[in-house]
Image (cartoon, rainbow, N blue to C red; front, top):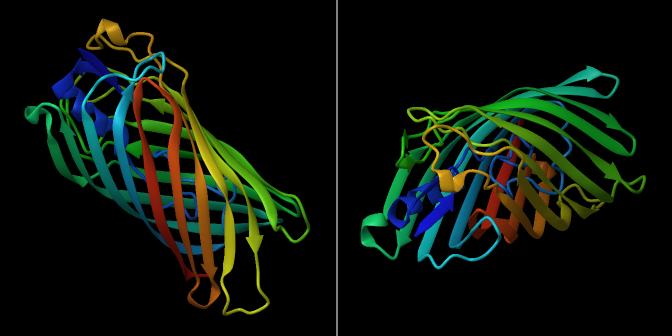
Length: 315
């Protein structure tokens, strides 16, 4: 039996390793939106950016999956139990350029642990280490009375452990990411909003093997409501519904790509709730988000829990 996970079609034992490749990726801290390779790592304010200052961020993500679907969206009879934990730490520096124009730079590096168990003991995997580093050298944003607009360029560097044909914590490839998004507020108090960030990921050839992952389009965001209090000691609360979508828009390619994989493209749609707390006295923002895959093709199906904290280190 052949199983397609992310970039390769392999027999069941090696297929479990490829599950790891799809799961663990540079998952930058979300609260100030410094990246979104992991689906579900962005939410209610995906299409906005913070006020000027230096922000330090830490985000914990827990992913689990036990099902795999083929290119037609049919469940495959594959015994699978994958658990992935990622804890990226990053920073973001935002500058006010005047007239409501902002620019920022950011970077993040994740530490990840992956455990994969299958129906065959030799397919088991247990890996821990540094993931692929995320760098965003430029993100420009405009803040208007009832809307925000952002545009950015970022890249993912193959710093994580990667072994051709066997996989690892990293993906063994450079990826260039171009993003555009925004946030719309429906009232003057900015209590109701809808936010989204779309990105195009341009993937380069993998190291040590002639396989190039097809380019993808991602959209992440959500709709929510903000509750404020007159008391500075009472936290601001944001609640809402968030979601994501991934569409592979270019086929995987390369001389090492198995013929059965040619023409198969990933699809992933997910949904879930989010709760955020902004605590002014300690200049921090905490986020909790849970999303579950609703429809998938050519990949595993699972759920993700994200807990993040952002601290304004310097105004």
